[in-house]
Structures are given as C-alpha cells and as structure tokens.
Length: 339
Ligand SMILES: [Zn+2]
Ligand SMILES: [Zn+2]
Ligand SMILES: [Zn+2]
Image (cartoon, rainbow, N blue to C red):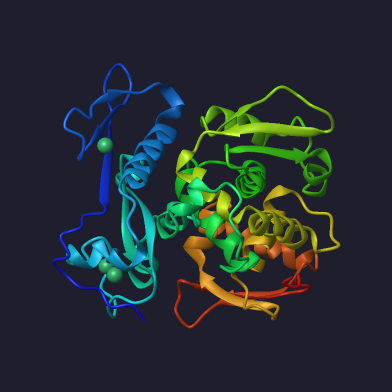
C-alpha cells in the first residue's frame, strides 16, 4: 500500500481544453501562459496528447516524491471509494466528451474509480525512475514489470481513451500491435504475416481510420512489412521495456487467434479483451461491461450481441451478468497461456 500525503508542494497534473471555434478547434492549456493554439482537423487529439506528454516529460520526478494528485484535490474526478491505494501512475482522463483532457499522477484505486480514464502504459514513469537510462542507450535490462496480459490490458484501455470513440475493431487491433511493437523513435514495422494472423488485409478499413485520426503516418514501403510512424508521443518513451512489449504483442496475437473458429475483427477483438481481463491461469473472468465495450469500440448492446456470436461459434463457453449489474462474467472455450 502506498500512502498519499497532502501538502507535498509538487503539482503533477496538467489539463488541456479543446475549444471549438469557427476556424477549427483551439488548444488551450491551463498551465501555459500563452497556451492557445489553433489546431488542424482530425489531428487535434494527437496534438493534445503530445502537449500533455511534453508537460509530463519536462516535469520528471522520482517515484518516491510522486503523490496521488487526485487525492490532493479531494478526489472530485471520480465517485467515492475507500481511499488511496496502490502505486502512483500517470493517468489520462477524458472529460466533456473529449473536449477536456487531463494528465495526472494518481494512485491505482483512484485510477480504477475514474471513468473515461486510462493509466498511461509504462512510459514517462519508467524514465522518471531511472534518468541515467536516457544517457546510456544500452542499460542492463531488468525484464521485470507487468506481464504480457497486464501490458495488453493497459494498452487496450489506453487506446479506448485516446482513439476516437467510433474507431472500429480492425483499427483497434492494428493500433494495439503498432503501439506494442514501436521502437524508441515511435516507429513500428509489422509484418504482413502478423496482419494476416489477425485477418487484416493491407487494404484494411482500419488503416484509413488510423490515418484519418492523425494517429500514424505511413512510411515508404519496404519488403513484406508495413512500416509506420506513430504520432501519439505520449507513448514515445516506452522503449526501456521494448522486448517485454514485443512479447506482449505476440501474446495479444495468440490470445486473439486462440479460437479455432474463423472470426471477424470485432469478435477477435472481443476475444482478446476477454483474455486480457481473465484471471491469469484460468479461462474465466469478470470485468465492467462498459469498460469492455469501450475497449472494443462498441455499445454495451453491441458487445452483448458479439458475446452471443462467440458462444455460437464455440469460442466462448458462456457469459452472464454478475451480481452487480455492471459486471460481466465469462468462461472462454480456450485460453492462451502466459509465457
Ligand atoms: Zn501546456
Ligand atoms: Zn481520487
Ligand atoms: Zn488516490
């Protein structure tokens, strides 16, 4: 357990507003004195994330000095809960339907209680813990940290908050692979074999969605792979754990494809989400149904229909609503092993 204390004098919370204007949205940063900037079209969200990431990187702080900023503000960003607990991570919160974005240090309990929010997958936190790693390009790796299942779950959640709400399953499956396989320059090379495993063709509709969302730029074609530059620089400093993320990307591939049934992108993504939220070593799990729906980019009723479809395809043994109506419980027909 990590105790929060007040009055540390350290402020690690940043907020950026997207104000609609006739000539296009304007970015207004509450921390920058002359922070108003006009943005261009669909890339506005990427610019917001980049700006928040810039603030966080400029204000690196050793982990023992970081406190739950949510607690210090009276926990007004989420419904009541039983107090702060767990490690302090960077939390990205989307408010007012994507018009206000907040990046803040928050404990695991506050993070879990905040809706429309995602823990930023091991990014700036890793750099803040070990500033010397930046000077030394090849530090001795400690392959410790979250397991593949946790990494995939965190990335799905991060993408659920940062990708436009209507982003389809194809684009989400691609974005997950791109983000997990990214190098320290935010570039990714994904082989056609990986895309084929996910039943995504090179002309996949999801590709256009990611381009339109300003999430990536295609790089010149080389060989039998797709190479892209990711534009979400809040993700950029993930490189200290790249081999672990590559392992997580492979885990996601196995999890999505472990069913023998031939499934479309949405059922594949739902299967992957259920795997990521299942109890390690078991074939069952429980999770908030709205969270799952958001991670899959569908409505709760759309999620229910897909779960029924997976049951008829024998990819899912059963599913039902839990003791709390917002909980969804399931048993998978097959589950992927942790490495
Ligand atoms: Zn700013
Ligand atoms: Zn709180
Ligand atoms: Zn807290």
